[in-house]
Image 1 (cartoon, rainbow, N blue to C red):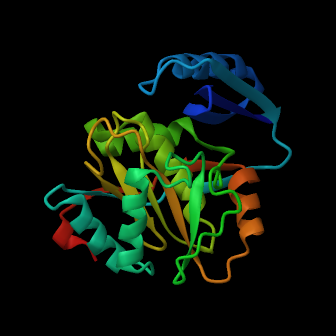
Image 2 (cartoon, rainbow, N blue to C red):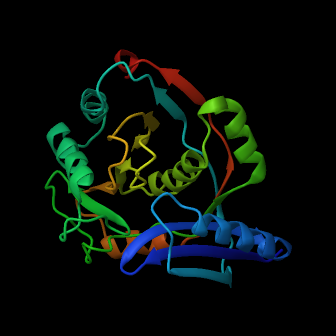
Length: 259
């Protein structure tokens, strides 16, 4: 059965407002296009003057993955203290991790704004590897099956959001690459303050109140192994189709339980 990638991007002038994508069979294209159009026109970052919707048939079979295990971290500590603990459990130095967390909150691009894609940071050098530091590397060709989405909704209960579903889907693809050590994300949506740190071989750690409500900054940082071939990584993240077809688990943990 042929599958199609449907992508939406909206902006106002040079200001990026929103983006989303799906991978669907041909008979669902029209329904999905209308859904993404509605989403583009109703976003808290503003009303776009440009909306692009692209539909293309996939040229290769998607990679089907199991979602990362999710750990919802109880907000008993400050986000900085939680991140300190989590980075100490990863291969990313704590001071490096916190440096890039603060950069996300203040505008990580060279112009001081939000990058369209992710920054790629080599560990332990701290060197930025992406060739275009305004654009970064974008993760594309991703989706989650209806069955996996409903299982995730059941497990997470009232904490389920579309943002969470899409972030977990994206991070599952990212952490599947052997060069990725961790992914840090703070939403650039002013009304969405939950973020996460995903750590290789551990899972997706959901962190609440990672920024003040109303802050228009955020983004993603991929921390990678020394010697990572950046062009090969870019090709995988931007071009390889991935569908999350099953869910691992959803646990609620206290910060002092993190190991």
